[in-house]
Image (tube, rainbow, N blue to C red):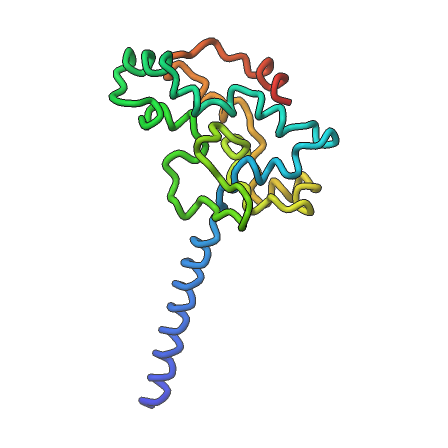
Amino acid sequence: MRGIARIALLAAVGAVSVGVLAVTAEEAAKPQYIGSAACGTCHKSAKSGEQLGKWQASRHALAFATLGTPEAAAVAKKAGVAGSPQEAAECLSCHVTAYGVDAALIATPRAGKKGFEAADGVQCEACHGAGSEYKSRKVMKDHEAAVAAGMIVPDEALCVTCHNAKSPTYKAFNYAEMLAKIA
């Protein structure tokens, strides 16, 4: 009987261990931010609507750089922000994609490739979610598969997490008008 009890105990411990490993593996498989350069490899052609170029010419792409201007420093000072706007959480939370996320959620770039860089401002993944799980051409060709793999379809509620009266430079935000500009 003791032998059977030991086997049962070992089996139970093994089952618990596998469960713990599965949770750990699941946590390790969280989507990672890959950066606008990775997204842009496919989203720069005329066929894709020249999305990379449109983003690069947008205020979103310049959001972090804007924080380095004398005007931003004055706005930050007036709003009671201590120090540089490019280092202040109050500013970075809206001016930088993935600000404050665990460093493990930032993908390591492939050799010779530009990876995620906070200085790229408000990038694709600020609106569409971390791209590591839906970035492949095969997945992206199927909208439903991309959404199932974690791609977010942004809506007004997402936009107003930053475009709101909490911002010291807030101006009335017309979602439909702004959506047409970035479509």
